[in-house]
Amino acid sequence: MKNFALTGLAGYIAPRHLKAIQDTGNRLVAAVDPNDSVGIIDSYFPDAAFFTEFERFDRHLEKLRRSNSGEKVDYISICSPNNLHDAHMRLALRLDAHAICEKPLVMNPWNLDLLQELESESQGKIYTVLQLRLHPSLISLREKIQSKKNNNKYKVRLTYITGRGKWYHYSWKGNEERSGGVTTNIGIHFFDMLMWLFGPVQRQEVYLKSKERVGGFLELQNADVEWFLSINIDDIPQNGKEPKRTYRSITINDEEIEFSGGFTDLHTRVYEDILGGEGFGIEDARPSIEMVHAIRTTQIVAGTQKGSVHPYVMKYGNDV
Image (cartoon, rainbow, N blue to C red):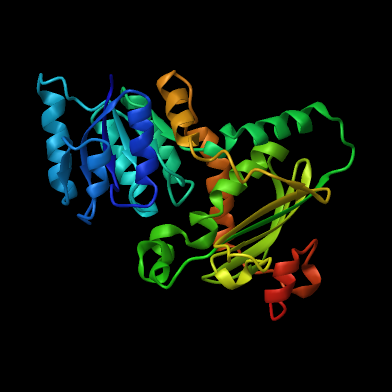
């Protein structure tokens, strides 16, 4: 049985990590979050120590490391805001513990280099959560793509819309300095998946960029990709039934790829791989971090320079 600590206990993604720790037969000994609305921990690890101040959490973990209580932390699961991931991974390495960090590992690609140096000096290792790479449907799709000789690039269209209320803009997620904005916060999952499926980036352009919508074009080694991301619920196509809050669509050569289901236990699969000596590390995460950083910092391309354009980008980006 391994001992875990967790940062960002009150956040949206923390329950998936709590479940994964429990499902793999391990235990949580300590957690931290400045928000004390963390009653969910009673459903998993009611005896874990909890802190609202990171400094006290840090000190507690150091005491556990130096004690002979059998509670020295082996892993720190990092579910905190994106801009804090770097510091929380460094804490794990100082404690000679492994870090299991949500995406993105860091906000800027060059921060990965220092983490690699620190990792080489520590007994700990940094792992990232690239759960879409473990989705059965996507694994089958990747095997199909790799087994097929295709002289022409695949034509891919990615649409991901997830409706967010007004709270989003007042939280850390709505602050680009803390979250990286829509591209980093909700897009990085899909950009990693696309490169995993179709190879590295050869060219990229951004046609639309706002607080709620981002869109552009990617030329990958084996695919041309039109993409659009949005947190505006009005962008979700409705079919006259009960309104949906999320719309996810990927088409390859005009064929819809269905992978809406099968997400429930992917974090547990990630933990199983890591505990089994595998898992995804810094170099696995680097390409998608470089990509979203480039999208965040690149200039919007105007009209005549545009290549293949997503229909939603045409709809909302006419004034670009």
